[in-house]
Image 1 (tube, helix red, strand yellow):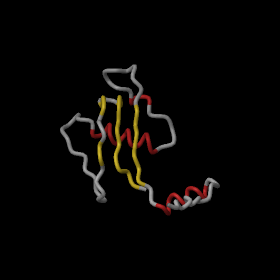
Image 2: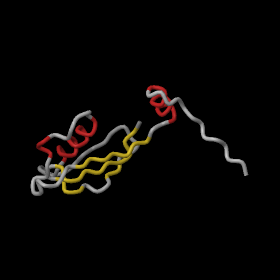
Image 3: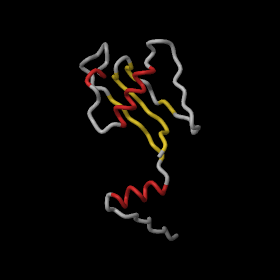
Image 4: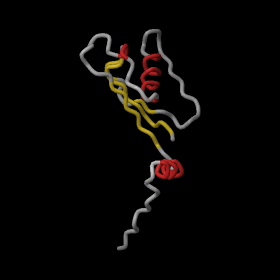
Length: 100
């Protein structure tokens, strides 16, 4: 499973990151000036990854009434889909061929 892109809204100093695309390489670099939101991005991705609610101090610093949002798009290979399907008891259903 590979992260393809993410978007963060109303998280600490981040109003809306827009869609941020990840490269297919094994290295990702977050670069920016001090206080530009690099740590907030990492914490938002961590909050998504951990099976718990988004941390309480994640509310936007200027708009405390807005709820933080973290969304991530993944690419999942066929083997991972099969493994997950088997683990949750669905098995792997093959699509029916289309005959023309």
